[in-house]
Image 1: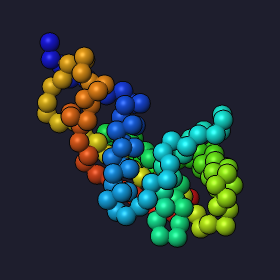
Image 2 (image 1 turned 30 degrees about the vertical axis):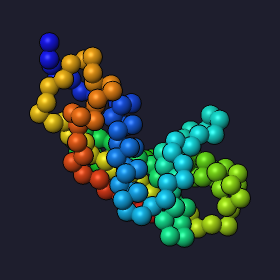
Image 3 (image 1 turned 90 degrees about the vertical axis):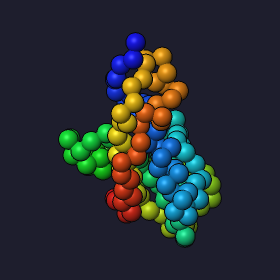
Length: 141
């Protein structure tokens, strides 16, 4: 039986990060790391370089604007965690003297008109979803 249901938040987030990575590559960013974690402190979605900057990028994916802009969900606590992780990353790579920037990417996805079964949603989710809009907010915090 074919039916329509939403992709779970984790799969939606992974798709958003994949689309964000491709967008950055197409705009001359060099991807250094994805999903950088250090212990229990959290994660930085994408670390990239653009010109003379090391960019720490938080990706927020949504399927609509009903609850506000995705960048609004990067609150002060999340910003502090990202900044702390950035220091750990820079120190570990011997890059403490580099210029840094903290960006947010908003990825808006929309469902296509295709129907799909519960069996194939996980592996083929990107066949049923497409990018509606991507915004890169440089120096977001």
